[in-house]
Image (tube, rainbow, N blue to C red; front, side):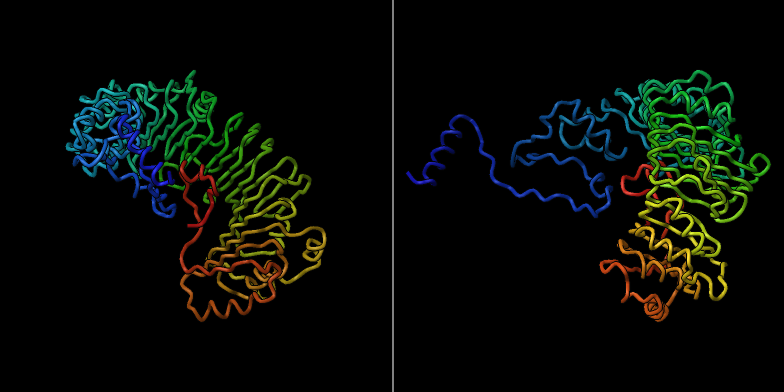
Length: 492
């Protein structure tokens, strides 16, 4: 019997047993370049609703279907009830993902929707995200506190609570009920709140990995108590917080820290300096700071043996960065005693662009692979700066320049800046990409700049050169950016 005959006989035999042989189908993977929301907004497909096949998805256990629903946006999760009778009750019993930001209503209507969902939902809570400013000022705190006490969000894993994004308004007192989820919380974001002293005393959040405080007023003692109560913390973000002038980090699990400050009328009287001391952080990989508007900033890294990403170092003012006995002040290496060989990504602001200072930084961080530089728009280097000097030649002879990526924003193409870029074009043998942000420049300017940079004589024959006419670097961070698997400072 030939092969086709045997195959036909096999299919008939399996059909007689009630088995169906799957037909060969090609499964097309989703395009990785498409935004995640394009996949998240689709309702779960139910095969066979028109009688054309078996509904295999609905055959899954309710617990698995509930987890799937909990990963959908709030509106889409609620709509799954129209798919079939099997799905009708699932959303009410699935882990609740209540994101009020996507409901697009405000005031009493929003309050009514939240109250209705919480009163009718029977399942556990997974995520509760609320910007209370959309409720209006009347009884705002009382309403939020009542929702936080709801049994519908027992065992909550993610809490994202904002009260207002108006900088000039005083922060709202954070309800104590926000911490009733401390045994189960994995992610906590608090915005525009005042965390009063005493709330964090003896607080223990054993599962918390993500902590973001945005425009929060908190004392030094309360902040240290909050961090100490998170034994599994991995990602820590302070954005425009005040009420404390120093923080010490001792964490065996922390992988990333983001610290940024702006001035507001409320903060100005309370915040003139900021001190961050990393005493012991054996897993710390990323340290992002943008406190350029502070009068003083002091960052000391005593022990962080895995630190790979460091930014943004301010290029002016009374700002100091210390690695052991190596001190960098205003991008000038005042004392050079320790080589930091773990740092591979470095970002800094420079006024004006100086090759001498960058060479010193490269000696301090000899394994740099990516370098991001933001140049002040107003800075104009004098003619003749950034020329090849003896110390530059010594550097080239001592070791190969390890840089693979260089990005310079606000590049104006002055003679000094051309000399700066040309040094790396002609000497960086491992260079893969150089990007120059030339905001608002013409095509003729870019063509002339390419000629001046001597690209035809580049040391790395495979290097790519890009000229961007828009803003390019990332200065604004959240937890999502901080934990970016590729590079939190990556360009847009």
